[in-house]
Amino acid sequence: MRILVVNPNTTASMTALIGECARASVGPGVTVDAVDPGAGPVSLESHYDEAIAVPHLLRVLKDRDGYDGFVIACFGDPGLHAAREIVAGPVVGIAEAAMRTAGYLCRRFSVVTTLSRVVPHTWSIARDYGVADLVGGIHACEVPVVELETDPVAYARILDVCRRALVSDRSEAIVLGCAGMADLCARLSVDLGVPVIDGVAAATAEVEKLVRLGLSTSRLGEYAAPPVKEIMA
Image 1 (cartoon, rainbow, N blue to C red):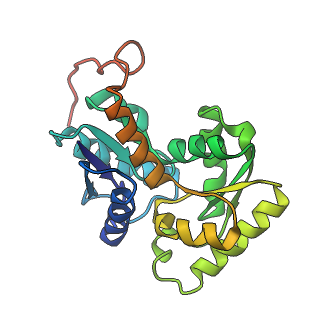
Image 2: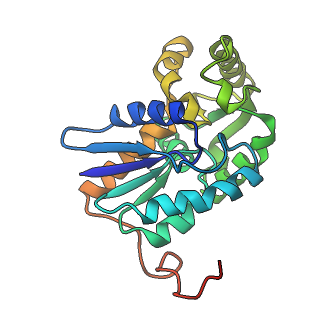
Image 3: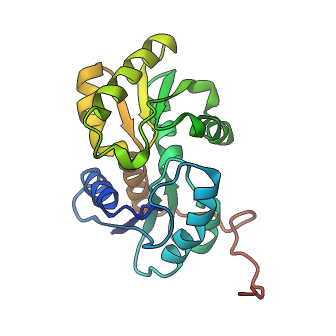
């Protein structure tokens, strides 16, 4: 089995981190490749960033043959619905996977993300996925995506926000709201004493499961192949 994990931003160090975390989540006989488009924003922190990134993301997916399933490794799940229309295997976004996984483990969870400006969008996708009733709150640590690897106090800030979220939301688990936080999952779980869910691992494991079950995207209705039409350059 081969799974392709696509980081929609162009920060190579984050792509490498995502690849390591994704590979750690799968079983024997599964090959995981992590790539980024090589064009587009260095991070996705706005609707504008997503709009720029999605065409490059879709190009990467269309140009990759030989993969059984795909992961979109950005917590906004950019381009997810379009991706499901154009590739043969299942496509899973890390936000949907993380929040659905958390629902197996508790009745109420908190999401800890990067910047305050992405909080409304995160609420929106939680409602779209039908899991908003399980979300106690969505909290920003105010660490930009590209500084998660370089800010020496980033972990302490994230840990503090997680602790306060568990208390204020009366929640029982934490969902990490950024692919750049993937490597913090195990450490945070130990420090907090609750399940901490990383969407990269959750989505990659979900794709593996779907492929092993012989399941893929339905072609009846919304996710049918898009109509062939002329596209002006």
